[in-house]
Image (cartoon, rainbow, N blue to C red; front, side):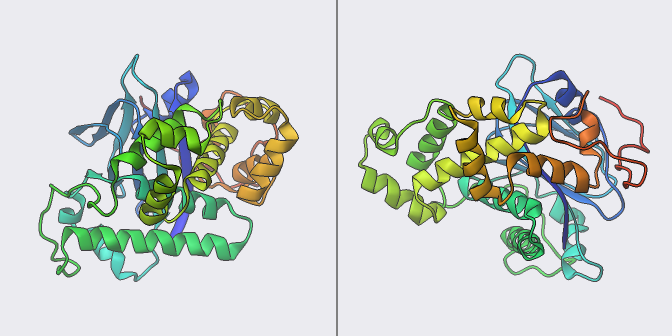
Length: 316
């Protein structure tokens, strides 16, 4: 399993990004893509099918299938993950991914646990250590097997029954307090909020809030909040031309050096190095969506591999 690209799009709004993400396109013969939506309104078009977007909705796009993300004008901007991957040659999982009945099980609904999984995959993909990148690939592979098992607990590859009505996370994975707490986190990315204030808003104790996050998501609420802020920072680094100082201000850091230290603890790279490494190494040509290169990035040179969109006409 190879992860070829992972992006987190935070509040899709700029004309350049809207044009890029709303284009109708497809991927190569061995490339599959997952989209996981967190917020906003719009629709996902898949060949002739159209689906309304909602929080926690997961889409699967096999090779050659044309798809597009079309935000609704004037609504809350979309936020989502996009993950492009290729299964290894001979991997039995490829048989399942190519089964039409597996594809018909999408879209599916998920929750906060799936958000952490996509964040972990993105974090591992961008990590400088190859072992971390390999761990992210195994994490994705495990997730795909779990999806297959959820469609057919006793199914075999090539014999997956149709199951469009796959439900949201079970009661053990979903909790209304967690959902509301995450919403408060998202509303206070710049104006920081204490965990005590979050617990008070939910009318529960801090101990109960901590217990819920640890039980359902495996991490305490403060750690989740910090990861969320750093995840948004990666989106601003890759999806905007904002300077490092401007991104620090966007996230409520009065001192850009404090932001850089926090980001380095999260990504094991400085913000500038993270931006440079992504644009230098990513094979998809994602940087071509920008009118001008962000600060700290390096334009692709003659010796760099072309992005997959360079050879294809764009629509949208």
